[in-house]
Length: 307
Image 1: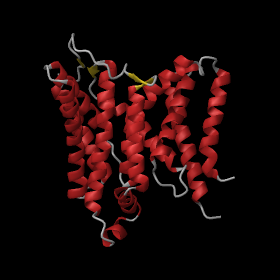
Image 2 (image 1 turned 45 degrees about the vertical axis):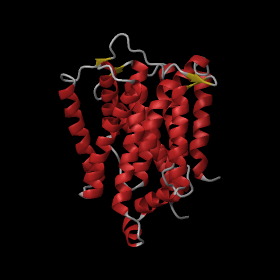
Image 3 (image 1 turned 120 degrees about the vertical axis):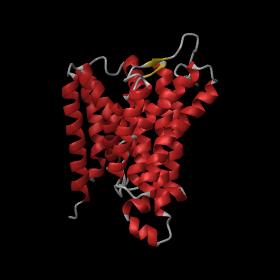
Image 4 (image 1 turned 90 degrees about the horizontal axis):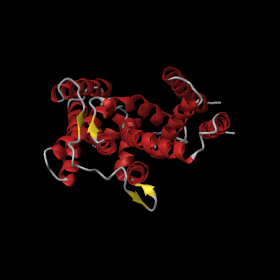
């Protein structure tokens, strides 16, 4: 049996284990909380990360884009602007971080790790300056948001949003002309360049795509907690990276793909949720997550080695 199926098999085994270890694991309340509170936000951030990794880079500033989106969304609502304008402002704020990365990486040709790390540090400082040293900004009384509570066909609206973003990004990456260019640049940038692919432009657009997905996550989280919490987006960074690389093990070509990334997101969330239910503290949960990611990547490496 191909090692490519090791992750789905492990995922099923983990579900069975936690179902037996904790009677609360398969309850409706726990599963709905797992999907709505954990899967939605990390899923959106990880989808954007998938584009950055597929293009041969990495985006350490996805949390900054999420936070900029959340900040703009709450501030615009608090100053009496419409929800539509607040959404537009949130998207623009997050895309500003993405554009900054695009200029540094696609224009100035800085290494993606260093460029996005710099954006992360700058974004953290900007948030501290704009929020009085890192104080949350709460939605003013009288402003009500219904995004988190709205349901369509019995399914929460944020779930539909993730499905729409995942479908759009997945189709573009797997079948679109731009997606093929992203993969080409990510695998062999020089060959893609000499083949006529506008490599620098493609790379720049991957960071805008990453920021856009994070922007949507910022709007969703603000609508859920009715507040902007400075630097909260950084909590999604490491798991987004882990989910993206777990997803590569599900593809025959070991390429980043949206479907695999979402399974990686679900896998990490199920493990964290299950460990919490059986009484493991937060620090051991982090250890388990790190071991899981290491094991998955080891399996991927072994599966790609020539016989």
